[in-house]
Length: 303
View (tube, rainbow, N blue to C red):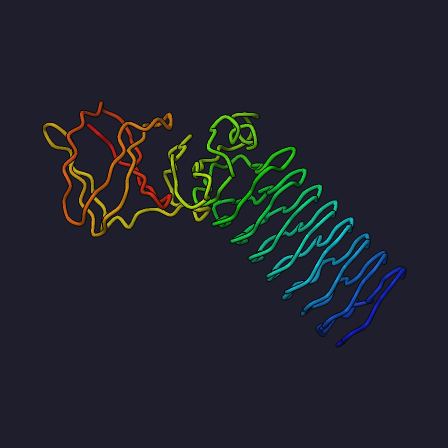
């Protein structure tokens, strides 16, 4: 099916895409006050369309959606997976994107939605502005370490900016929460600090520009690499060596750094040059975090 410059209004199913074999294309179309817009297509391609006031808008349909607006729908997307959503606007929906996994949501704006995004397995959420919603991002993947949440601004959402709906730990170090107050950010994140059945979330505090990292909050050491904004150092190019009266950091690149203990407290901040940099600091035995000014980090152990 292919539609261009069409308007579907006040139908039970606006565009009946219940086709077992085949795909659906819509360019410059409007879907207004329908019970459903698309349902259960094998694949959809949507460009420059408007979805306004629909109920179950796009259901169970994988595909590419770009340059489109989703306004005042009950569900913009639901029961779907393998979505590629780019350059879209979500405003006033009860739920923006409710996806089951394998999706890539990039460069979109989410405002005034009840829930902006629910993320499943193996999904990527990058370069989005998620602000002034009820809940910003809910992570519900069975294995949240398969999900990437990078370079988003997740700010001023009424209930929570970020909710961990799993019992797994992860981190979102490259995302800005538009505050330099750790208490304010912590109150906007729902995790194991609020409910012991939930996993913990590590995060970074950015300055007002949302460019520079001021602090890295490491609530938990992640023993296994995780793809949720883990931005880990390349272990071959970064190394920390304990010396008699301090530590030596060896790196290939210059960087601003911070050393943090497991409580998230900064015990040292400064800069390192390419090669070896000696830092005269006495650290007690234990595990520490070395974080750079881009939000990347690694752990090291002092004996």
